[in-house]
Image 1 (spheres, rainbow, N blue to C red):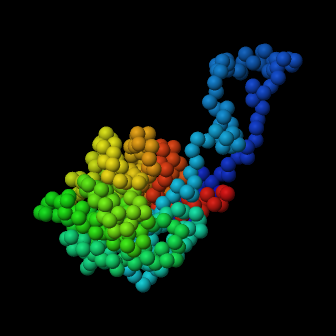
Image 2 (spheres, rainbow, N blue to C red):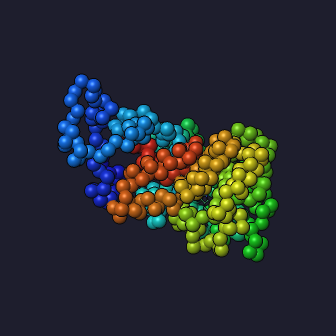
Length: 380
Ligand code: PBG
C-alpha cells in the first residue's frame, strides 16, 4: 500500500506492510485424530504443551483470515456515506492553504466548481460549502449573509449550473458574516434568539433561491427549524430539505475551522449560551426531538468521534437519518500525527470513519471525503 499524498511525510516504516494473503493454516479442529497416533508423542507433549482450555467458543476463529473477516464484517464504509465540507473564497488564485488544516485549501468559485465535478465523478453524494467572507463585508448583524450575490450564493449557482447531480448543503448561521464571529446577533454580551432567527430565515431563503438543496441550520437558536421550514414552504421551496445541526456542542474541536473561515481572531467570548455543554446527553435527545417536531428531515451530531455515544443514542432512539460531523479539529489531529510519523494516517482515517458507521451514523461530513472516495474506488 502506498502512502497517500495527504500524509506525504509519513514515516515509511509505519503500517506499510501489505496485508498477508488469506492463507488457511491447519487448526487443531481440522486435524482428524481418530486414526493417527497422538502427536506430538506423549513425552514431548508433557514438556511443551499448554493444557487445553476446553473452550467451546473461540472468537478468534472468525478472524483467522481476510476472507472470513470480510464475511463477518458488520458495517461497511461506502462513498455513499460521505459529505464533503469545503471552503470558498473570493480570489483570483484558485487555492490558498488553510494553515491549521494541512491538505485543505480554500477554493475560489471556479476551483470549487472543478472540485465539485471531481467529487461527483468519485460518487460523493453531497458537498457542504462554507465561505471565507472578506473582513470588510462583516458587520454586527451579518447583513452580507442576506445578499443574493454573496460568495455562497454565487458559488451555489455556479456549482448547480455545472454539476446539478451533486447535493449542496448550506449552513444557516451568521458567524462567517458577523464582525464578532457569533452565529446570531448581539445586544451587549447577549446573543439574541428570536432576532437571530428572523435573520437566519432570510439567509436560508437567499440560499434556497440560489439553488441550495439542503439548509443546515448550525446556529443552535431555539425555534429556527420551524421558522425556516415555514418560510421555505411559503416561498415555493417545499422540496428543500433541512439537515439540522440538532446536537451541536460548544467544542474546542472547531478551532481549525475558525482559522479556515477567518473567525478565530474576531470571535468575542465563546458560544456556550447557545451550543450545548459537552457533558450532556439527555439534552441531545431533547434537541433532536424538537428539531424533528419542527420539521427537520435529517439530524446531525457535532463534533463526531468524541460524541459517538450521542450518535448511537440518537440513532437508537429516533431511527431517522442521522449524520455526524468529523470536525476540523478531528481532521487536524489525524493529519498532524500522521505527518509526524506517529500514526498511519490512511488507516486512522478509515478506522475513524468506520467507527461512525458502527455507532449508527447514516453518513459523515468529513474533510477526508475525496481521499476516502478515491481509496474506496481504487479498492473496487
Ligand atoms: C458555524 C459552524 C462551525 C462549524 C460548522 N459550522 C463552527 C462553530 O460553530 O464555531 C465547525 C466545523 C468544523 O470545525 O469543522 N456555525
